[in-house]
Image (cartoon, rainbow, N blue to C red; front, side, top):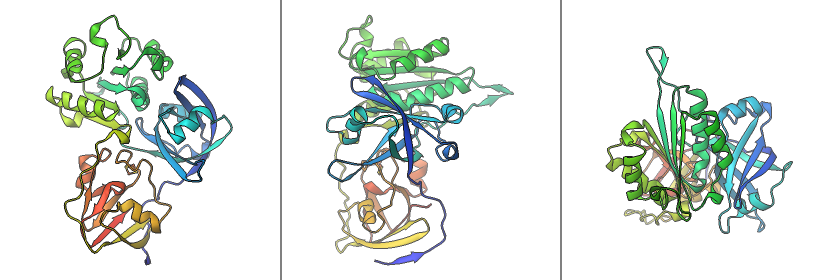
Length: 374
Ligand code: FES
């Protein structure tokens, strides 16, 4: 192991303790957690609609638990009210989600990383001949996948006076719909520009078209009857693996360009196991990690993820999901070659620029250098 000093380039996101202002129940298995952001941290926690927060706590067994949760509030609420909100749905055996849903109380403080993620980004207002250009955004979402899309929809409706938003929202039943009141409020505030289509799998609807799962055939039928794909400028897909990948494929088959389809995947555990690297370095790899302008080197096994090896020498490295979903572990590959088993977080431009998800990267050369500051 060796340590070399070099010039710092980019500051790593730092953990901050934020006070919980409120915990509001959304459904039997989901809550909204509101954090009070002090004025001096407003800039640090500034975000684009669609981003997420990474939260950290020590579990009952003494192990550190990190989880990423999408922000449901808007950048305006942070600026005007100093409030940042996330939606947390309880999942079976979910240590953090279980705690948030049953033990977390107002007044407690939680360690939080500043917002990360590239889903959607701000629906920036476009102009044409001096007039704001109207856009039509559509979401195909299911369950807790509504969380970041609520922020994107509210931001678009509030900041683009002529733009429209349509959400196709899949759930089991009306009682499991997260943010039902907030969506109804958006409908009240923007009746002409916001359209919400509920699709329920276990509860009959007036229209048979809206009863069932948001699978390929139902999406095609809904596009034909209610939401022509040619009428939409940008699509936002968020939810479980099957919904996101299936809806993306259906949109591509309908002729929608991939640069108009934005995806955010929840539930990394549903993703099929990654293929193994075809090439591996039998004798081990010397891995060099650059973080905060400081280089550390460690020898790693061929079957090990770069992140896991790097954490042995730099325990402060950023990561959250370890499933290729959140991009918190993103770094630039400066030297050597790695095999990235799965990637649901980096776009083509990131990959072309040499960025990798270190939690998904296994070495294919004897030397590998990754830079977390780049
Ligand atoms: S830690 Fe989430 S993608 Fe690597």
